[in-house]
Image (cartoon, rainbow over all chains, first blue to last red; front, side):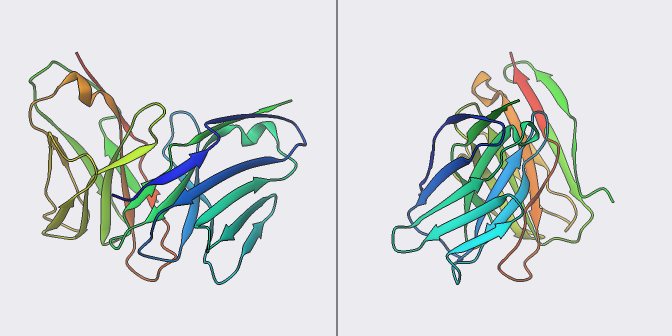
Length: 111
Length: 114
C-alpha cells in the first residue's frame, strides 16, 4: 500500500510570510506530483503540479520543489495571504490515475 | 459547465440502512474514483474505475459497492450503514489522456450514520 507522508499537520503564518509544506512518498506509477487545495465545504481542487524532469516549478506565489532521489516534494507559498487559508494535500497517482493523498495540512494565514 | 455532480449533499442514515451516493460527470472522463475524508486522515480511496464496466478496490472498500454502467455515472452503494461510515464522500474524475491528468472533484456528500 502506497504511503504518502505529509507535514506539518497544521501551520500558522503571518500575512506576507512563507508557508512550507512537505511530502514524502514510497513509489509512484507516474512521474507527476500534484498539490490540491481545499476550502471548507468544497471538494479539493488542483493547485499546482510538477513533472520531475524539472526540480522546481513556480506559478505565481506557489512553488513546488522536487527531490527525486529522496522521494520528496514540497509546496512553498510566498507572500502568504489570508485567502490562502485552506487545507493542502499532496498526492501521488496510481496507474489508473487514482490518487493516494497525504493527511493534509491546515494552513491559517493571520491578517 | 457542471463538471462532477454529487447528490445528495447531506444525508442522515440509521445503522443498517442502505443508500446510494450518486456521482455524474459531463467531461467524458474515463477514470472515476470515490474517496472518503475523515479528520486528520486526508482522503482515502474507496473504489475506482478506468472505464465503463471496469471497477477495482481502493484502500478502504469494505462496506461499499460500485458499478460503472456508463462513462458518465459512478454510484457508490452503502450496503448496511455503520457509524464508522460517517464521513464526507468525494467523487472525482480524470482523463486518461496524458500523464498530467488533473482530478476534478465534486462538492462532496456529508453522511452521518446514527
